[in-house]
Image (cartoon, rainbow, N blue to C red; front, side):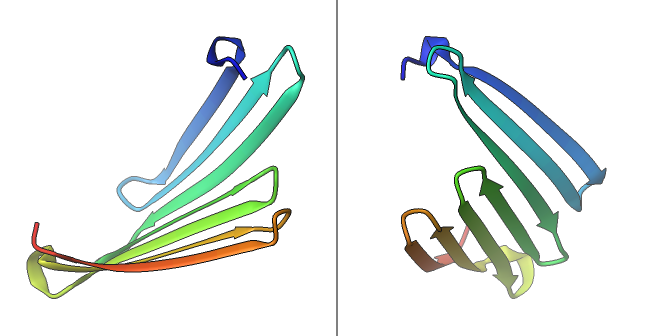
Length: 99
């Protein structure tokens, strides 16, 4: 797919400023009539952030990051991805110290 032939349409809606955002993206390639849609949401909580998206091909992705302790010196991260058509499941985790 040549990038010069792609059409992207994006939309973002801030439902609650600083807390909840929703978004969508439509990708279309006119020459092959191939398209994909992605819908996502982001939730900012007191010490955590949750982001998730689902696309038109059956892939679901989510991440969770949370601050442990004051000042964000220690962060715990989790991510997951489910690709239903490929029957693939991924899970990851991490710890961020400092910064």
